[in-house]
Length: 120
Image 1 (cartoon, helix red, strand yellow):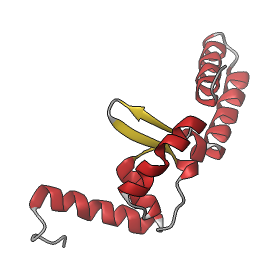
Image 2 (cartoon, one colour; image 1 turned 180 degrees about the horizontal axis):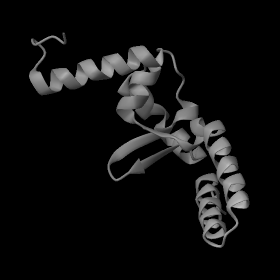
Image 3 (tube, one colour; image 1 turned 180 degrees about the vertical axis):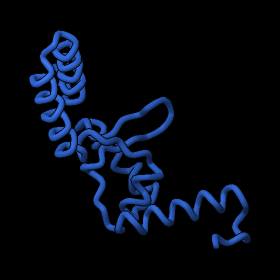
Image 4 (cartoon, helix red, strand yellow; image 1 turned 60 degrees about the vertical axis):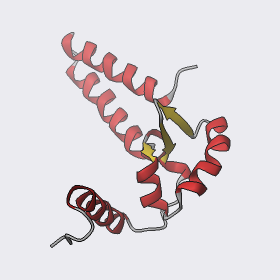
């Protein structure tokens, strides 16, 4: 069975073939459709790392790992090498994205410079 991501990639390739064959209008129509579907389906298509899932949800690593087997069986979690990843659609957003992004910057700064050196 073809996944949504594969179907979008196939359609984009078809659009490129149409463009090269001189069918610019049809190619642009397919590309617009792919862009709209990609945007609408972002929560399904986008995979979050465990760290991103923790920031988005405010949940602990223990909570996420406890749910991982169930979500993996449903196709909503996977292992990419040794890294656990979660579909965005199963990770509730309890913390505003701007707050999560700033906290991520702070954590990265702390890792690079130590906890005592505060972000300006």
